[in-house]
Image (tube, rainbow, N blue to C red):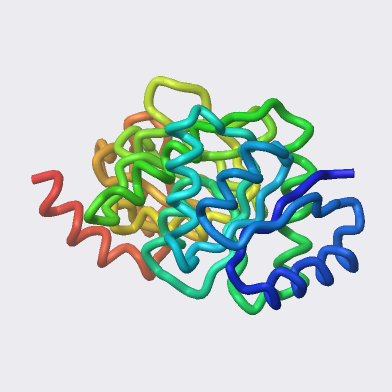
Length: 255
């Protein structure tokens, strides 16, 4: 059995989560509940569950406060934090950059099953708290212009400086990250998900299969629809509908 704790100030929501887990994840055993920041810190530190389902907004603070307090106490007892929250754009963006799971209220069974399956996979690996540290770093900022991203795969969690990502390449439902001065990292998420995160960081989707960092473009060859030469010496095709837009961007950048 996988041990878990529920932290939410709404008893009805805790009961609802218990019911959903009993149906869709019977291998998860809820061994404790808490309704506040104070009791959440206490029970997590005492029980040391494998998974924590954590509400963001509570009467005496937030789920982030719990993580901060555990960090101060050197009480990081699990890397498997699942936030349960109403839609808050800034917080959700921080989750996605930190490779942390979240569920929106009301919780949809299909989304719960996806998160639980990921937890089962993660529990087979050694615990790594670096992505939680990154979340806290991002939440403390007054801006959501994050500088690093956590990439989680079967090898573990990799914290990457966004400015070092040369390009991302689609591989069915996977994305291959080509990164400056290190081996590629294959992630089991679609290129579209990373396009949404990285567009504001000077990344452009030039093709169905390619998302590029404009800082690493070496040249633009105007053959057929065009080819881009990247700093890793790869030649990438450009979708016809992207050619005019990209030509305008690169004319300013390369001249």
